[in-house]
Length: 190
Image (cartoon, rainbow, N blue to C red):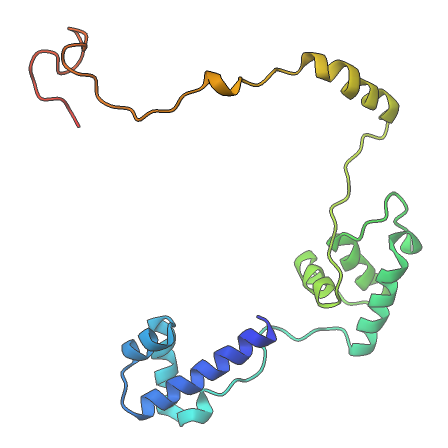
């Protein structure tokens, strides 16, 4: 959640506490503040136990970062140097898996791929997906094939005028085949 989102949530919780003090019931609090009834009931329970102070924010949720601020600065510098500086020479792409491996090598801390992704976003980086290329591929032959052969063999699209769109409607009894369901005078199935 962003800082603005946390701030708004804090304001809403304080507004809820003020409403509870005036005797407003949780369903009405939920409606007025546009929150779920479940949240309103949970806040009401907290408010009954500790009034406004119980609804105050306890800071961001989730686990704390396992890297110190100094280590985060070093990690950002490592990422700036690029993957080749750390042994990944096949392409210049930072994947989340590579960043997790780098963190393990440099800081002896284990991060999951999703955790490395969140950490990269926090540092202003985004993980990339490496391009999959055939090792034996001949780029010139592929380009020639696309330009010359593919244009000849690809299927042409349907011309714009050849299509139509209309609502489907049930055929009238006069044009219904004699052996069709409902042709014997029985009511058609809907």
